[in-house]
Length: 111
Image 1 (cartoon, rainbow, N blue to C red):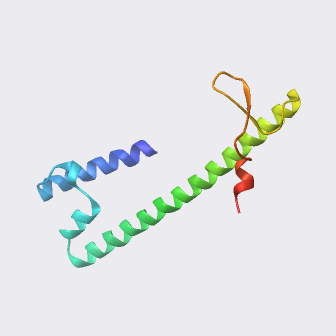
Image 2 (cartoon, one colour):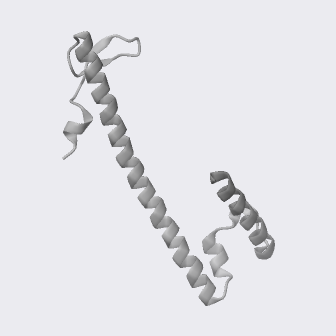
Image 3 (cartoon, rainbow, N blue to C red):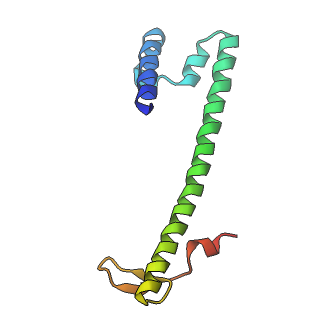
């Protein structure tokens, strides 16, 4: 699906570049809207803003997912440390040796 979106974007850029007489890499929705009648330009600008908002929401969800993944990794590490009898909260160096963590787990720092 992502490949299809990229293909459609590339086709749009190629077609718009021919009409606007610019390089395809320079074609943006903002540039295209500048060359459209007011009604169509307004529609393109509204949809551009909607895409920006969707991108920002995706970024927020991505950051939330990252926190959850880090929490799960910390939890699993603590379980394995407890099973092995290591101090809970210890971390491992690049060489695989247990070392004390410099601070608590990530989830404890979340207000």
